[in-house]
Length: 409
Image (cartoon, rainbow, N blue to C red):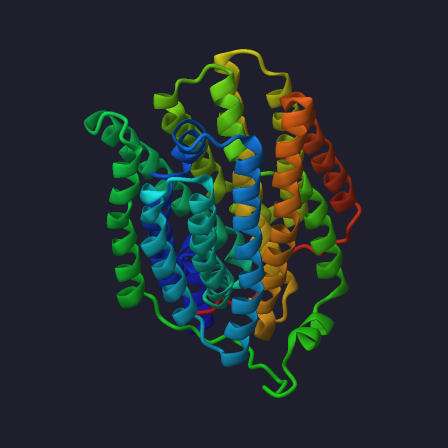
């Protein structure tokens, strides 16, 4: 590509390459399928299966930790074999076959087994998917690319609950039927992947041979700043329990069961609206400022959830909570891509997701136990405190501003 053509290419177009757009629509469909189930899962567990907050914490903690362990494995192997599409297709396929089977559960242990299997699929696809976005996007547009992907993901999370709400009216609150129907958008997502996604080689070849390329070697090649970043992410994640607890809190505050999918829609509308601006902002002023702002908002929201007393408080806090996601989800991933050597992007994303998963299990378990023993205010206060601690630690970390480099086709 000539310099003149580079100059003529709009910034938004450089960030929205074919693979980024395809993966965005796949996430829309997949999350539409997932979010037909997820907002209703706490109610299904508590009212149909008779499980409490502790069981919910165990299910979500184990599920997310499982996914994160596999994210390291799949990211590492996608670097080693220099192929990513197969991992992505396999991961989405497994999840979309397993997820609807929750309809046949008769015990919370069945839900645990199925959520575990669903997260196996997520673990196989996530790191290779995040890496192929970086492989397909120039550095100066990574915030936009990851922000767009998160926005499309959240669009699916709007469509899913809306569909669930409509189907609940048609099928008279029959949750199991809703779960089974989620297979339709799931099949469409896998089909789009198979026929739309193109394998993309990293722009820099890996120098190490396959015989010497291993986890230890990959870790040793990572920059020190990235390793410190992972420690800070772990601190934040320890206070970042599953959002299922927010839905349970909303129900406590008087939000009717029939409206829980709608409050989930409000959350994802805000997430979607802030994801692209958050990503673009991080391309312009730096990732750290945007992430710290998001984490402070998270701390304020959690503290407020603990003190909330009215139905409308839940709606307002869910909306504010969405801004935290918009400012951090895509930007955190863009920063991982900034830190990572080109030939180790899958491994870097695997390490990032592993750390998040290692924090997710104790975060959800401890949060559920603290809620059960000391009440919701204590649990949400704990989450807010850890978020503030992480914000201070990250503020002290030196992160170089992303430099603009040549565009990648």
